Image (cartoon, each protein chain N blue to C red):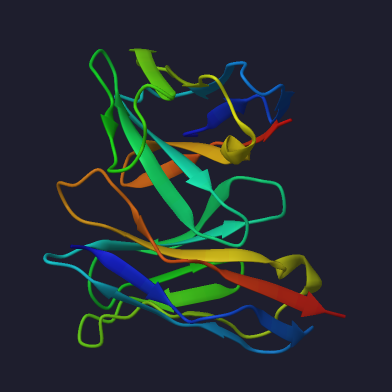
Length: 112
Length: 113
């Protein structure tokens, strides 16, 4: 079945550092890929998405490119801020399937 | 657009009582809504898919009689945790399909004492 794998463990980095969170997926068809962000005590917010291969999703300085050849959708940001501290979830949805498959999420802590 | 409102945001209840959580789509019609449970430092676990006008589809291992889902209209789905116990304490989040994406509620922190 469909699945999403995110790198293990929390990520702690200094302000203005470069952030990468790895995400790889397994799917039978051609899924849409998403990154969601969850701030403390809140629900999930869509950060960015890509619906087909080679698409790049971007928002608030974050970017992720849909790589079919490596089945990846890594999240990057060139210069993080303290306000970016949150949990980030990678997810996929197959065409014709209502459900979202989530990765385990990565806690990102940005220290001043 | 595509806003989902979830209420309450926090609730504390006594063991053995029932708690109802509401999820409303404010500016669109949601024929399908999803209920998730999130454990501390864990990902989201899909509990059930709520379909307007029909029975919910529960994921394996989720007790149907304990987590009652009602989707009586195109804008409202409810999750009732019946006879709650401390192990039911968790963060519950609803979601609805909107266009090509999904919109999430802000979550409900349930604490059973």
